[in-house]
Length: 219
Length: 243
Image (tube, rainbow over all chains, first blue to last red; front, top):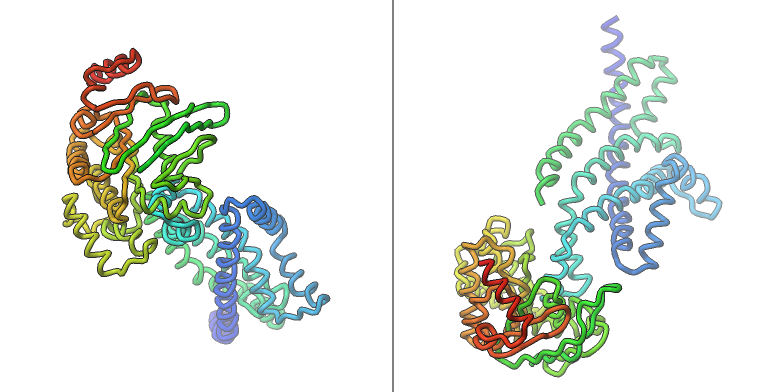
């Protein structure tokens, strides 16, 4: 009994590891994408230009109101009808990146809005222009404040990357499902999958809680 | 040098400035005093365009101050400001705070800006804190850094918005001493303050404002010892009795 378990584990580990690598790749790529787009939303929202702020608000709410799975289906199955054919990995990354851009936007916005108005006035009083104030004074301070929610988003994103399995991205959850379907060792396979996610997310969770301690309370 | 002409300003229905006119000459130290809510901080903030005004005109060296015009950045580099709450950049060191404007706004070379910055920090007695962060300094020290930051722009005038109001009483003296030495060096200064002693000793002229109007203005000693208007007399009595 125990020997079959060990044999199964040894047999499944390489395949699941391959999946874990893809999970990390999807997560990191989506992280970059969602950070850039989210920052864009946040800058639009806080620009003081009504058209941009409203557009950002509408897009962010639109994205937040649609399940990640549906966004993934849209990117993977609907875009080809407009001649945009993406690989599963690319579609998964873009879908997840867009979905999380909304949450990243909120993290950045709360950071930007937390900066004291006196900071902007001080920057203005030495002759800085709008974009320089954003770049040199507001964003460096806002990033610190945004780090804890940003880290939390990252943990959520790692787990939600499993949803890309629905559009055939061969990440950890997908590989688990495939092995389970062919070996019927559901208990062993999915337990290993769960442990795989935990091994990835627990260090992250620990890291985020340290960030919170460092930046959460103090300004 | 600074000419304030018939300035009106309202926040919604609240008319805070009702036709203020003040002229400030090169090298002059003008203190603006008055009860809170009299509009004295607002008029100061209008001078460098941090606040818009509804009617009237403010001229700095003959240039109209309009916060939406392109030359507002130019005006701000010539008229610096020191705030009640210091507003130092907390993510930059003391020295970086001072040289931020010269390097990034005036595009000065890093070396000369640093050299000048250290000299200014020395002038305000804080060269030993150059590498510290604002959060590690006392309020009085932070305010002196803020003054050095304002000076680093090599302004023609500095506006002080209640620079000692947020300080513990024992820290006020150091800040006032720095301001006094600036005045002695001939800097044009407009100071909104509650420090009557400073106004009496340092100011060339004192302007008393109440309810959005200039009630009385004149040479510092004369106005503070022999105010003509009843409201000025009342205010000075209240201020001196609270001390």
